[in-house]
Picture 1 (cartoon, rainbow, N blue to C red):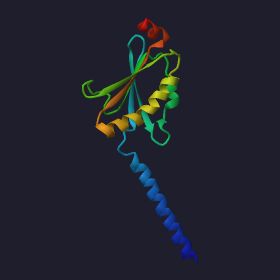
Picture 2: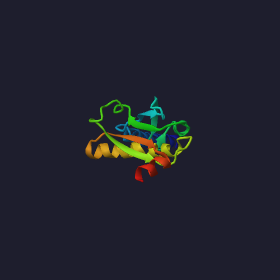
Picture 3: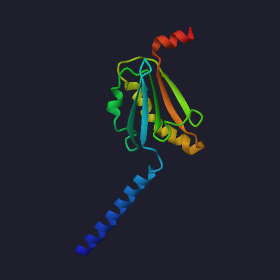
Length: 145
């Protein structure tokens, strides 16, 4: 009887290992390291490195990103694409309307971007970066008047 339990244990362990390996291998071709270049109103730049988690579909450092302050423009790219020239990558520009002290809303756009960019890369081979420009209500209305 104990051989039966040992056999069941080995079978269950094998199934668990196979499922875990499939989960790990599913994301191995997707970039997990992203770089965020942040520009303030005076065009001073800071560079941050973040890790994307495909299980939670957000950055591991999402709390840190949401607390960024004084950001006018930011550019998010996977690590291998951040220093490429503009001719080698496409940039998706989002204007965020409400100027706020923190980066809470922009962090939500950033969390969705790696999923979309990976689909585009797989679909047509294009490399994308995400540029978020905090225009504020005044700039948006002023441009359209």
